[in-house]
Image (cartoon, rainbow, N blue to C red; front, side):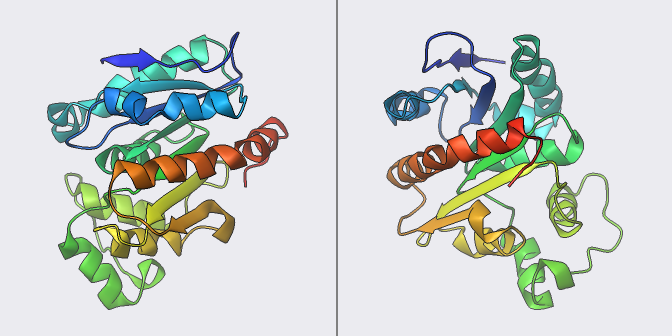
Length: 224
C-alpha cells in the first residue's frame, strides 16, 4: 500500500505510529497539517508513517491484511518496540477495526474524530442507554458496525493503549461520546472544534504532549 515515511528525528526510534487519512483525504494531508513538524518541535523520538487508505480496500476488508503485511510488519522488522495505528475520521474507524480483527498486532490506537458507523446503529446504542446496556445479539460476519461496537462493549484489551480525541462540534460527536464513556477519563480529549484539520491538528498536539508518559508506560509494560 502507498505510504510516506515521515521520520521526525535522527536515528531509529523505538516507537512508530502509522496514521490513516479520512475518506476524502490523502496521506499528504497529514504533511500539509504539519503532523511531522509537531513531533520535531517537541523533540520526540517517534517515527511516523502516513499511509493511503483506498476505499476499495476498506470495502473488501483487504485493508486489514495490507496493513498487517505492509507498514505494521515493516515497523516490527525495523525493531520498533511500540507500534501504534491511528487515523482521522474513517481512518480512525479502520484502525479500531484492525485492533478487533488482529488482537495483539498493535500496542496502541490514536483515534482522532473517528467515524463510528451509521446513525442506525448508534441510535440503537443511545436508545439502550449506552454501550454497556446494548445487546448486539448474534452479529453477522458481514455486519462491520455492530461487530465493532460489540468489540467496544466487550471491553478493549487491557494491553491496548487507546487515545480518543474529538471536537464538541464534530458532526459525529454523539457517537464519539458513546465511545468516550467506555474509556478512562485520561484517555479522552474533547475540545472545542469541528470535523476538520484545524481541530485534528490541535488534538494531535495534545496527544504528543502526553506521549512521553505513554512511551514510558509501554517501556515498563503498562498501558494507561
